[in-house]
Image (cartoon, rainbow, N blue to C red; front, side):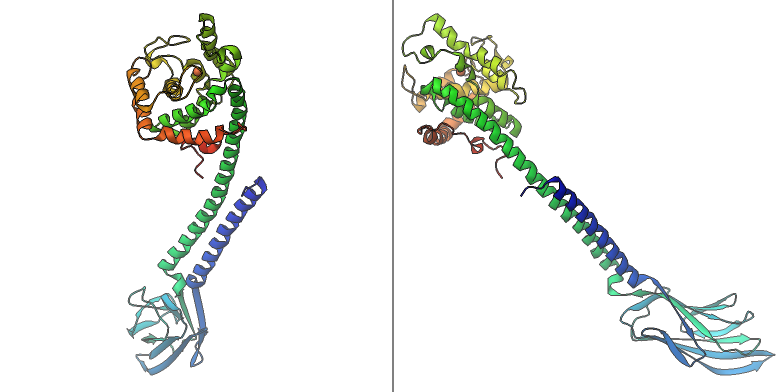
Length: 418
Ligand SMILES: [Fe+2]
């Protein structure tokens, strides 16, 4: 599935909406269960409803007079029949200004101005459902009075309002945001990979076309470019080069002999001994390839491989006689892969060598023709049969008249695993 810009924008808005909606929902749930709720009741009645499920009564007993002061005992009962408890509660009653407390029980009591304030002994004590909250006080006042109003202020403590539930909700918000983020990035990544895969196809198809020109000129080396590319990429992979480098080496391997286009067919396919001039013409395919691929700067190493894949480690190769690590690494790798394929293929002037002969040749060339650090990887690939797998795969495609045979699956370990 490919996301266009509009769908991507819609998804981002949807994500923002989900996060916002969830945040509002969480806020509402927490608010419903934790907001400070104030219940006021007219206690001129014997008992009355404070709120749904919360009821209060007050009764006066033991009243009398002493020293021109009036005293009375007030007994309060508050009943909570709600499913949710009430915590951090505080009850307040308006009393005359000169009121003094003679006695109290059930809860802490103190006077603040003209307010008689009741609080639980432990402030956080929850006043749960089906509990009777009983407390009382003996007040000493100048005149007789009866509490007219009680104000109970507290916090509802429902299941959804505790810390654990809040964590769950916050976790859900984070999860929703991450999920939507993952969803968007997954499809973006897929989109990106589709594009990348398509780019690779375009590159490969272009190269296929070009290689078919080379193969048409030199049918004896049909499939050579592809095999060299696969050997070289496998060496690079075993040398633990990065995926990008493995892929570059593969592409560069495909085009390493591009310069053969400029060599006359008669020279390229001559079965007999070559004259010095003819040998020079063949060797010039390196310089010609380097010139042709000079423009292809987006694929790193391609020009260098075409130009330097016939250099030798001891400096006796061509075209420039570079030695050792002055020869670019990619060219040294392709040089070994190229030599292996030449030895293991039939040519107009000889049959291929067998496995032991090839290993011997390659090992003899270690440090003279080949980079001694690369030779062991090539020898391992011969011994563990990797080269035979490549030969079988390429033979199948090369036998047909259709020469368009490269696919992205040929690139070892590069991007195409999805
Ligand atoms: Fe070559």
